[in-house]
Image (cartoon, rainbow over all chains, first blue to last red; front, side, top):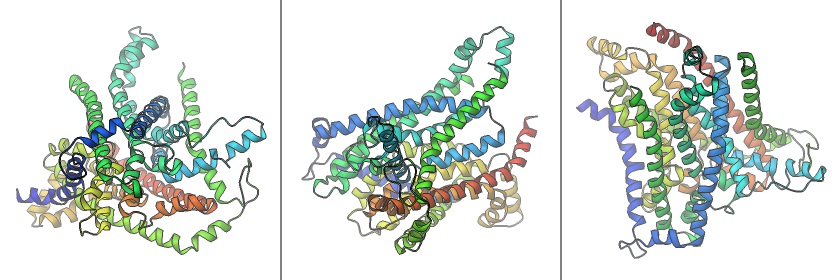
Length: 274
Length: 271
């Protein structure tokens, strides 16, 4: 018992100090009114304030579209990756890992060079006498920006699943006379569907929590839940920390539920298989 | 679709993906060596003068030192928290692992921006150095990476027998761990340390909001430059990218060097 205590002490202390305590305090603060008493005012404001509702709408819209598009690219990309030689696979996986850590300020800056007002894309459009069709500082620009880290992240999650699929299944089913489409619909799809759902929930949650890229790319002109929280914390005159706590509490609650459900889908499937 | 044709399609897809993901990086690199590149398709000329300007700037050096310090401290704390736990879970009590699973989804359920809200609410008015809180919080957020890399290090060998033999021979548990276990998992530990270091080195959200820009790390400096000086910012972004590429190269080398014997034991066990 004593050694067990020693083993868990550092991690336990860390989790209590910078996870459990702050999150508990944050939840309590979200139920406090300005004078300190218990109230649901903050939650009521989330629903009645237009600016807050816009943040929620933007976050949901960007995240759903970007994780949907990314998921399609991820499925195709992860399938293609399984076809390559083992050495190439490892190198590419490391590169994907690297490009997902390129997210944030560097990514935003690169995209501004490419698509910004003085950027290469605009120069190209001007030379070709085409109208300006794409604005990087917009909702669709932000959606595009997210795909640059969502795609590599998704491939890293989904690739191991595809890699474990048994190639003998295909032989067996074709010996039994199954057409490729039938094989895909009745064998492969049911096996990978739960994993695809799980990857989608993680990509969605990841997009919902993105602050750095959005903030660096658009300043505060596109408001999402994370950038709204950022403004509520250090926005000078408009700072409202209890309100930030309310949004953060809602966020943590909803995301924990979604990720938990996503995890459950795969786990119940695994139990059935066993 | 024949085997050969599907392989060709696969290669085309991967090439396309690679170009798609690499274009922003390549453009930034080209921007960093161009004399001027505004509203034209190609840069006007090439130069290295922006590199000279940035590297001799004292702000750059101090930001670099701060980021390195942050990365180093975080790595030490993350290792101290996780090495004993992952060892214990793998060798003595695999059930613990299912309880540790919550850590792997932490960055998705409680991302940096949410965690920092709680930290501000709790620690803003307490007389505890914010820098200490920052290092601890970054360690917490890097735990999923650390955990998975360390957990992989324990696959495929009987560490319990090794550890208990050392205890029987009279070593204390701590000494036995350092002398017998660590040398056998050093590749995994090294990978975990590099991944933890990189994530702390490039941290932005917690540092910026918790310390309000008073502690200018590389990423915060990058953001400031981005607003004022595009050339300098592209140089910094390129340097940051080369740093990431260098770490990835080391990771690839470690994995290639150490994965071969591991794989053969795994396959041997299957047979």
